[in-house]
Image 1 (cartoon, rainbow, N blue to C red):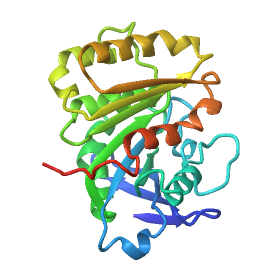
Image 2: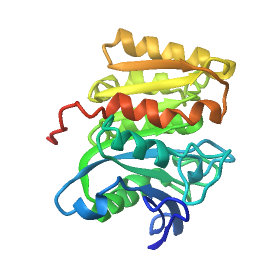
Image 3: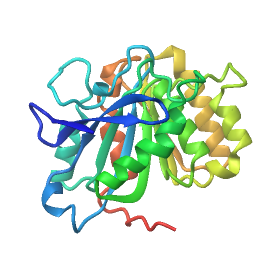
Image 4: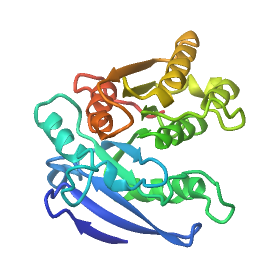
Amino acid sequence: FNTRYGRYNYNVMELNYYSESLKDFVSMNVYIPPGYKLNHNIKRYPVVYFLHGAFDGEKDHWFTFDRREFKSSHAEISTTRMIMKKEIREVILVALDEPGGFFTSIRRDRNFEKAFINEILPYIESTFSASGERAITGLSSGGYYALYFAINYPEIFQYAGATSGSFFLGNRSRSILTLMRKNLKKVKKLKSIYLDMGNDDPGNTHENIILYNYMLTKGIKTRLDFVEGGHSFQVWRGHPVRFLKYIFPLDKPLFAPN
């Protein structure tokens, strides 16, 4: 793989991994917490996977090896700040890049789902000091795929999230709600699902409320937060803070793999 460290933040590196199943490189940004280089031989860390949105989506939407002020959430900055203030546990963050933003097998010749589960995730967790505790989240349609992966692979992911999630409830064959109903036993294996969105996002408000209420009625641990803003970085920029504080507060008991 090729590695490039950040120009502005030495806790972020860019990796380019060649996938045998895709016959293509997959680019990703990886954040390591302060002290990782000193402690990685004696400590293991949870890993959080971030998925971007569709069409103009890219891994730099979450955190970046270069300082882009308007189209990045800069999770590397907020996460370091929360760790140093002892608000959250130390975590590794991974932002994946899939051109077009479709993280499942939309095309027969490009099965990203297979590559992610069978190649990329094992590669990341054998390269870095991972504990086996995992979360996945995404923005807009990336939120859909984050829940898709968590529902289908509860033996891999313990937590899931979405910000401004587009869940395609009007498309019965694709709807996350339909997927949850068909796989309710799997969904209940997840430790929690966190949703947030802007209070001025009419395209997704109804879907998020329906999904949230369904999970409540089924006894699934979940939370839905509304914040100021629309379908934009005004909302997405704060999602890593809200998500990480919810799933990995410092006073939370350590995860014990089965």
